Length: 182
Image (cartoon, rainbow, N blue to C red; front, top):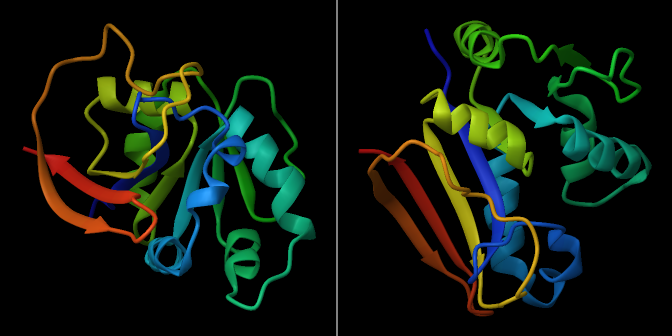
C-alpha cells in the first residue's frame, strides 16, 4: 500500500517560503498551533531536504514543550535527501541519496507505515512535483508581502490542476489551504 506524501509550507502572499521564522511569528496563534499539531500527529514520518534537515536537527533536539511537538519531531522516523550528508546526528534519521530521488521516494511511499510529511525543502518539493509524487499540498498562506526570497514554484515545473479540499481561516488572517491533485 502506498502512503500519502504530504507537503506543508508557510508561504507569503507574494509566494515566498524562504525563512518563515523571519516573518511568520506575528501571525502565530492558537489556531495555527492546533493546525500544525494535528498535522504533525497525523503522519508517521518526515522527508526533508538537507538544508531543512540541518535547520531542524539544530533546533528540535534542544526543544521541550507541553504540547509534545518536540517529542514527536525527535522521535519519529526522518528521511533526508542528500548527496553530502552521510552520518546524520538527529535521532531516527536515515539518508536517502540523490541519485534517483523519484525512485527512492516512491520506494519510501510503498514501504512507510503511514503518511509522510515534507516541510520546507523547496528543491526536494520541486523534484517531487516534477515526478508527480505529492498527494497533498498544505499551505499556511500569510497576509504578508516580503518582496524578496525564494519562491516555492519556479519556472519549468510541469503544469497540473489541483483541487482545493480544505480551507481554514485563522483570526490573524492566515489561511490554511489544502490541495490534492485533480
